[in-house]
Image (tube, rainbow, N blue to C red; front, side):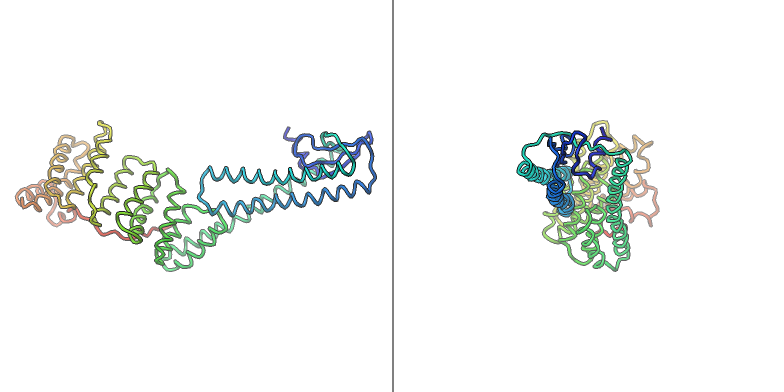
Length: 401
């Protein structure tokens, strides 16, 4: 079956006269009933004029085959990528080129009817030597190979441009050049998460915060439900840039909107909640921070004591930096008791928990209790301050590529 179709596609002949003297014109059908047969032998002049007309129609069809994928390609690379959009453009390509083929077929059929009268449909099977068939097939394969080579050559510069963008971004100096190269890349080649990430960094460095935010959103959209290590930077910078452009509250709303599109593990959920909580506390909108921790802790399986423990540690930390010291001490009491009963898993965490509870007690005026906790931690006095719960103000995260 494949051999038959390949021979039909590779055969360049448009007309032949069979042994019975019948005249067979090739029509525009690709697979079945590819010939229009007349039980008559026409003059070379009439056949020649008809084939000239046919070749003129072929030009329109070849132009459609050439220009349609190019136009659709440049439209496609500038819209949001999705499998649905990809399938839509593939269907649109087939619809356009086959629409042109049907139009050519109708025009050619009308010409044959007007010129020679009614015809019958048949398979276009000229009696030619196998050597000729092999030559036609070899030439057809060469054309396919040439197209494949041209496509590869078209995309090879994309790798070079990506590399130049990477060098410019990592240099920490050539951000405007990186933006220009990224713009060129995205105008010619399909966008990728990496390109959007690099242009976002370069745009932010040149204070184009709106453009940088748009690029991070594009990268997050392209990655879909998948969550990667680079998403930590994307989400942190998403908060930073949205706050720059509007308000911290809007930033949290956008953060939540994109986070709901991701499939996260328990660890990733806790890490993203940490990022958001610190941001909210820093920007004086701490409402709901503790409620979110309690909601996630309560949603865990009752047997998942490890995640419950570490999320509760984060909750106590947040209570401290929110200056809710009494509530923080209550949570630390529970955590320390639990860790003492499960030393095989949490003995290493006891040191940190004792110190953090000691600082909370000191803030409440319980200096003796604080000293006892510091002693229980078995840390040197010079080491204690590095364990006090605190946070640094958010800055734009610059990463290497």
